[in-house]
Image (tube, rainbow, N blue to C red; front, side, top):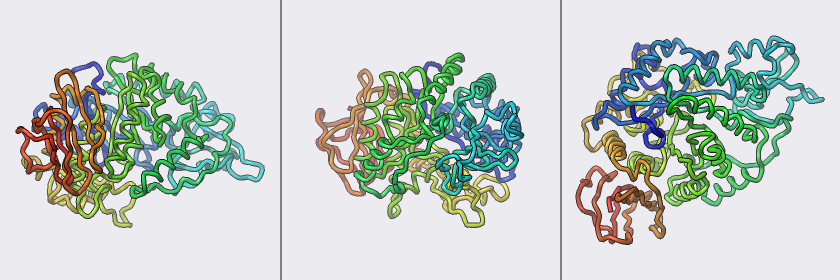
Length: 544
């Protein structure tokens, strides 16, 4: 496999194991199922998707209160997903195809059934008491401070333990107690977890809620500030105001300066192995603070997920503003990462749908994601334009309302869409027509567009690692930028509106149309640039 900064140049594909592929027919995805579908991801030919790496959400033993993000054993596989031997076969099969394997590391918290926490909870004199965050009540008997869980339904971030008479901190569910990262023994233990998986051949980690690992050691209250609920339809001014408030009022339960020391140790462990990487889940809607998680560009995360980018409304100006600002904030050697969907947010085809144009917009979103300077992360199913599923009340299982974006990948038109029995979540209604089998040989399909974009990207120095410059004076609703490397210069122009647009491109009178999101517009021929004409909801890549 090629080395040297593969994470800068490749496309990374997220797999939520429960919902990707079901090998044993029990309705739940598993590791053997992933192995069986590796050729879809990359068989070395343009007939496959062509991704360079997969990121696996947790597959560790877990009571599944948060579907694997409550880890009961960091160094094994939950039987619902298979065995360590299944994992080893998956890694070997992926590597044989040139696919790297990135796994989720969940260092902020464990399950309340993890042996570490059971020991910590056994008494105040337990050797592992200080492995978790325990605190006394306030004088009135209330929790130690006003910190709240990230899950609104969970309420306060503290649960009282009657036998020992103290509260323990949980940034998420009560079944997910937070580890105490001020304790050097915890740091040593997690270093051992990382080495266990690195020794098994994993190529890197996606570090869950990395910004939560360090908090105010004095456990002081968070300042009170009314931010309101996020709304994709709100004005840009309102969104800027929200971000300004977040900057002005830093919280004490996350993003504490000590987190960067923790990450530098993570990086040292990774750098002791050849060619490994880490990407951070850092849910901070402040681009300046987010950029700090790269450290110098060489000593903390290799990549950081940008949730400001992911949370933008469907407006060209909004995306351009975030990309330009973040690109200017990064350290010299740092490399951005871009993501529009994952297991925690509504899918692109649903989130941006407005009156039935979700598929057209999803095609433009694919071109945006795969042509920006940086590493793109693609969520499973987005390559076929899969939409959110509909979950009847009696089938809801997630505490935070994330079931719709986690429905099974739609492989075919069978009742289970490729899953056996009654899948763990209902299959999407549109599975009979939106599925891999139906799109595989259709040149006009979303899957064909993704394949063309990814394989074109592989052969383009400009897209894989070239420079980026956004273009000014575009018409409202258009985002246009140049990508360049050596003699290759590419213009990417994206129409975020449902109306035709024209753009007067400085320089040559025409170029070569390399790619269009419109399947009716053939690529490979000359295209006029004075003006460049875009159809409604169309994106193009033009060679200059």
